[in-house]
Image 1 (tube, rainbow, N blue to C red):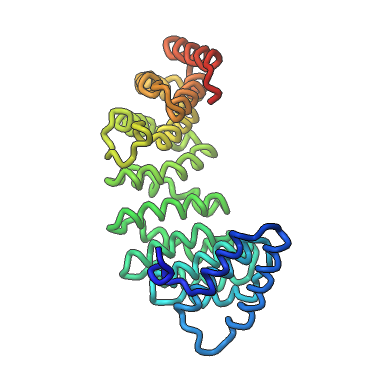
Image 2: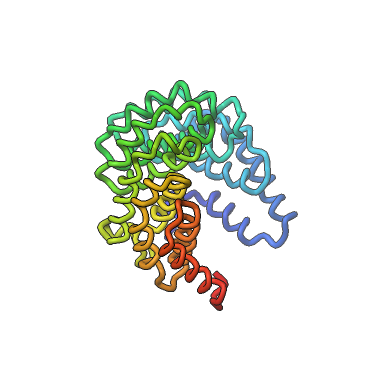
Length: 327
């Protein structure tokens, strides 16, 4: 790929080349200190185009990535996030997310821009704002952003709905009380027509169920149905990994079922058939299959006991212990 086709200046190309060819940490540090001096001089200059500013911010990320302070340029990342050019906007958000510490005051300066992008008619701008929110959100930013995020649960683009689930999960990690009341919204998301949105919703549902499993007992048939559809290859092939259907969704569903079936005979009885099916289909001799079988064993030994499943779990453990494969 030529420098021209990649829209790189010779200075940028030379910087990356010099870093890659440095023979010691001391030499690398000298290169970065020279770059810091260049950026400190060029960033405040009048007439810097946004296209050039985008490159400067990428170089700024290199400076931070290699252990040096580039706080002198943070405000420029905030400015570029307001660009109408989508690539420039993404670079502004990316630089902010990578460089600003969790308690940095500049994070809150982005709230208004995030709100504006979330109501944009361009779904790519909306998606960029949601992706940035996952990286940039703090507990103080949840109240002004939550209503905007929730409105996007009904967006017509599955990419946006999926990223909303990711943002809500991040909000839960920052302040569980801010989203604990969203059980009904997440139930609807679980039934989304797009499998990627459904799979993304499992992360937040898992977190909510961990804290209050009793509130979600009625969802056992839904989780069992989804798991059955996955193992029967009824999801698009895009979700396969080494011919294993949606393995990460399977793992998450198994953990959820373990929580819901613990000490609950009625809930557990609805899981027995699908758990046996998952364990048999996953035992294909590949690493991701071993991970699913292992999670099945954990689930089977957590829910209300079933003799047949416990025997299958014991056989799986025996195979693990006797295997020459270290995985």
